Amino acid sequence: MDSMQAAGIIFVWILISSLIFCSHTVGSRIGLNYGRVADNLPPPDEVAKLVQSLKVDHVRIFDANAAVLTAFANTGIRLTICVPNDQIALIGSDHAAGLDRFIKVSTSHSLDVLGSRFPPSAASFSSQWSQSIMQPMLDFLSTTGSFYMLNMYPYLVYQEERSKGVPLDYALIRPSGFFKLDTLNGIRYVSMFDEIVDAVVSAMADLGHGELPIVVSETGWPTVGDESEVGASIENAVTYNTNLVSRINQNPPVGTQLKPGMPLQAFIFALFNEDQKPGPASERNWGLFYPNMAPVYGIDLTA
Image (cartoon, rainbow, N blue to C red):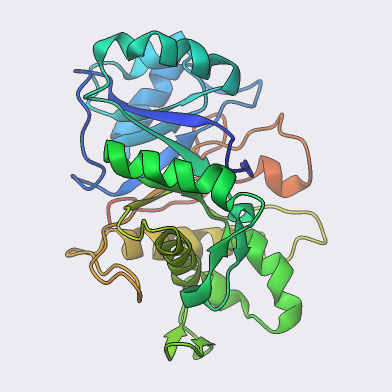
């Protein structure tokens, strides 16, 4: 699970088989994050076959590992490639091998860049980031026809808000009768997912870029957690990711309360459990699969 700040990492979208950029609204809207902070994962070529068997055609990787790129070449699977900060200047100075017309560049943002999140219609970016980073970043994304990438973990937000009476169902995208009311426009929110996306929509609109499309670059639910990590379970992971897939793959897209019809794409975190990740138990248990490629639980990513 990633909690990068606004200036974290740049992501490059390429279709490995032909080096042609494809719009994020084409085909399936569900992708997978393929992290490799582990010492027991299968070889990349086996991973590529596993992804193909899942009928997923979008994968996000966290470095430009040659073995991984080779494994996914000519598979038709589109890759989002993370370029570490120390390599950004080099890539920029090389003019990206003449591929600037075909490759979209963006950067992912955690919820930490928001100064206020509720009510969603009044959300804004933190004053620490707003003018110095977010304004020029959004200007760049708009000029280049790119998109805003959002790392969003309702599981983590639930840990903060459950003491305020927010039920688990609200975080699991499972309507239960509970709602949050935006008193500025009368909109009732029945899921944390829509609440967060609309907060980002409003924050971008506040800086003149409410038109930018949104890609949820990381989201998911852990299957195991420490005793203090309420809600981490296989049952809840199945519920959240199943509801997420259904929500994202609706056709035509339903959008959100503030942006009806807006197509969304989401990358589930993560493909595998990663045993070398530090922190609480949940950090090592976000995967859909164990390292031996046995499923942690079953889920239809094309539903």
